[in-house]
Amino acid sequence: MSSSNLVGRGGGLASAVAGMLLLLGHLLDQGGDPEYGTVLGSSALLAAHVVLVFALVALYAAQAERVGVLGALGMILSVVGTTLASGTALVEIAGASGVEVDAVTGAGLSGALSLLGGLAFLVGLVLLGIATMRAGVFPRWAGGLLIPGDAVYGAASFFSGSAASMVEVVGASITCAALVWLGLGLLSRG
Image (tube, rainbow, N blue to C red; front, side, top):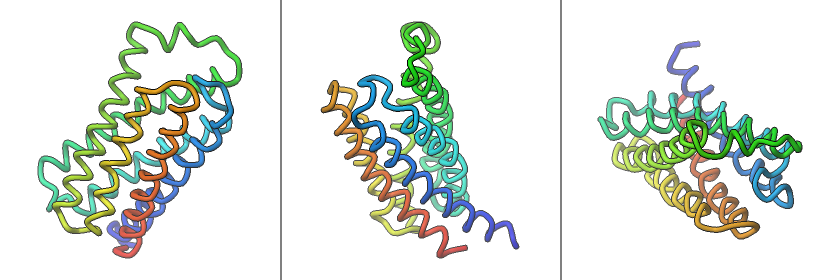
């Protein structure tokens, strides 16, 4: 199997799985701890972020010659952001299981890394979505869905309780659709 087939098939599968795990995790978090969700939901989110690193690299590799600096910056910020979000998901798993994690999630370096990770992920996916739309390698609106999906998800931070949770589910649904669509695009190229 050639490396381009491996990137296409493996990356396409990773993108689709990451999107579905992202949505599943947010759905499973419904009705859990208002701040940390559920152990199962947070575990699905952790798995989504880990798999998403591979998907992002594959999506970038498939269109690297056409996305330019904007796409490279989007991929780098997305990978850094999703990596830091994995650490946050680990803390949320502990919090959902009843461990006192306020010292970890509060102020200081860990709180700043959590905030910066979320911001890097948000900006990175938006940039990658724009670059993907411009590159024309994948269906234009597959990349375009990354933008509102991430924006809606980011808007959840302005809400609290069940309203924030529902906004996260809407954002995750749109992002899931984008990642599955992009994954199918990678699979068809592989």
